[in-house]
Length: 119
Image (cartoon, rainbow, N blue to C red; front, side, top):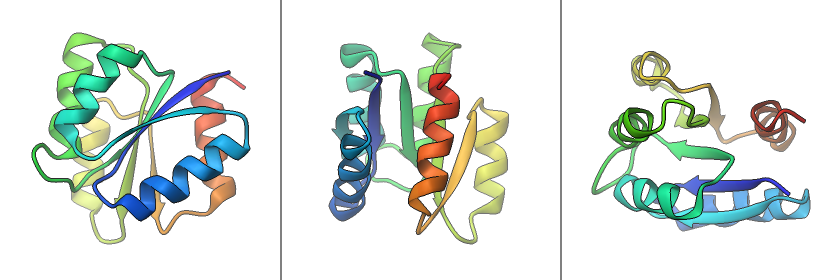
């Protein structure tokens, strides 16, 4: 079973995403900000990270850069609100593997996760 780290400062988004992933057979670990996501990544060793771009403490792009600096193979899918196109481009340049736009379509999110898990 693949392990997914869900990093989002909005609890309802973490809950919604976690329920969807758990119902589809994934193990889920949650982080409320970028700093927590970086710490949990190295403790939990998830297969894929779903990273919100806009978070307190440390934003998703900075967290992505820190993950990729220590683990160039980190598989990070950025989760973004509409209208953050420049930030998505910055995330892709920093090594994000994919991105999902909120509010996300459950099938699209699962497809992106399966692709990164090699399923």
